[in-house]
Image (cartoon, rainbow, N blue to C red; front, side):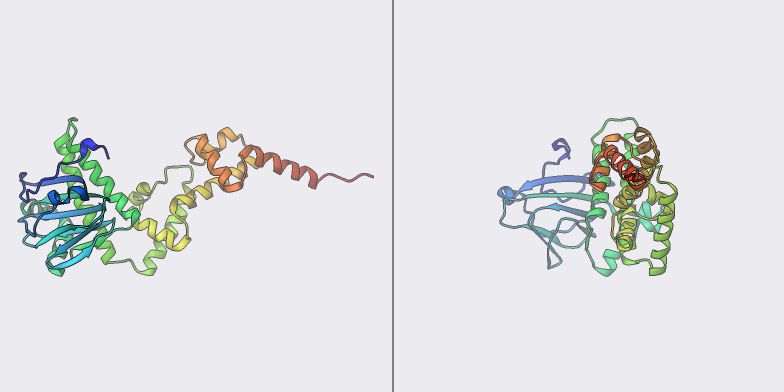
Length: 303
């Protein structure tokens, strides 16, 4: 992320905004004496997204060694503080504050917006870990929000509000789905439907985002279901299927310049690299080799 979007750290622990605030911090251990904050509470909700560093988080006396991908939810009146360890590693995190009044406004729209907050309050579980795929998806939403807040584009305030609500709903959905995993039968049904859809739309857009919209589930859930059943990522499987169709078309004298576009590759260079990685040679070399083998197979020997 651009340095211009980073926030200057402040030990302030009260909100200046009525609704929400978000910060991107990138500190170092050498300055840890400045960045340490004593045990404290808020009268708002804090979401803490841990990106990098060697940090312990003390929450109500329980100490947690943080890992990249950890998300911490701190409800109002819960004591907590971070402890930086002895290392020169950067300390990077996002800190997102949201007022209780704003949460109550969201609750009037749908209780789905506050599932995670209520879960943390009732279960007293504050730490949640995201795998790489899920955390990258979460980061993209945080990046989008911060970038929009720093912009001067038309409709900025409306877009910021949409980004905030989208981020909050995403957090609630991801935790809910992790806490309520689909049954094996539901997972198998989703997997089969994904396979059929991909087979029928290989010449169209098939990103994880697109598939998530088609099947009304989160994209990281699709990624997990596919990996568990196929042993490949969605992208790897789609690429292999497209390459197989391209190979068959090339061997039946299809024009190489047209074939890759017919089956979903956006440019020739990416198609060329993928084809060579999969088959060990370029599309042209593959066609020539096949033609030579075919000619040799059907040549009649004459003494």
